[in-house]
Length: 543
Image (cartoon, rainbow, N blue to C red; front, side, top):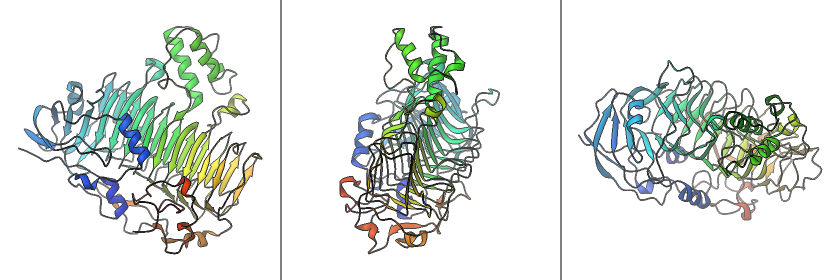
């Protein structure tokens, strides 16, 4: 039997209002890319143009004997073609197929409910990723159990340790004790980072802690997916010094803490380097675990100096340094998160990154925050060496009727922040807040917000060309159909658009269309439409 590969381009359907369902992948259906994002993906994610072999995991239906498939396109300029493949092996479990897979293989998973997978110290290669693909309509392939329930540490459904070069696509993850998908280098034991993961068109929901969680993992692309209803924490959680991450065109809804959390976690970085030295060389330079832990006198710099003194390899970006760099978070819908605290986008120790074209509305806590995870205070460091730095916050729409905190918050020595063309609607004196010496090097202007509050940040520059002093009602009147309803409805196997969702396109004649700074504009808006150059907020004028 021959079956044509069903691919999902979720992002298109989310923005243009067509119900989310399976569609054949056509070249003209792939959303356009921001040029710098496309350049980053081209430089760092080198997928194969054909598969080495096709393996199949049987489900409610038997495996086919041959298929027609194509390697997924990550950017709009891709032109991968359909190719015919025989199915070379069939398996009863994803774990068995994964154990047999070689670099460049495609593993198709037939509709049904499946246990997950544990991957340890293996992977694909440059130009030869291993691809897990649900072979059916969206929501028909469900991962709802760990690979081996008898292993106490397997509290995640897809679990990758010290692994690399994998694609995960068209799968639903639900009911994990911790994370639906988990990537880690487990640096404290291996001295390694995991790296090069592509997550496309997944629905990870109602998990115990996170929809997707990473530690000590670099080079991650997460796009066109849903991460919802995490019971304890975040939709997406990037931690453990992870660098080079793209999170775009996703929906993050109803998570108890943050929608997206990127916390490089300098405290854990110091501890993990300590543990690795303790186990590997036995020499921690008289630094104790108590000293490097919270409240102790030793810092990350101390344990790094110990590492360097032993002539150990320079691991470069694959070292736990307590900083996340080169993160792009764009074109996401983030709503209904933060009941337990945590911003829509919560950043700690993040540098040289960009947050743009996101719609962040109806969240219980802040919209975007950037700080140092309290490391400076914990270690008595002033200024904190781990504050956010050189993060560009551009063309986001942040809208809430009320909230226990401000909407855009920088604190704990955030430096050289760039803030232009954003909408911040929250009726508070601290809707836009700078605290604890977070104004050094700030460039900020052409924003639309009710008020800015500076606390212990006398170095902060004043605003330029911003519009301030309005009420929530006056701010919402700038949009076509503003409300705080959910973006998606989750009463079936796969989310569909809520017919009552808001429309945050500016109305004709709105000041939001003409008061932006073109020097800081993105090429596209959240919907993937070209910008005119002077818009404020995530959307340009409705096409």
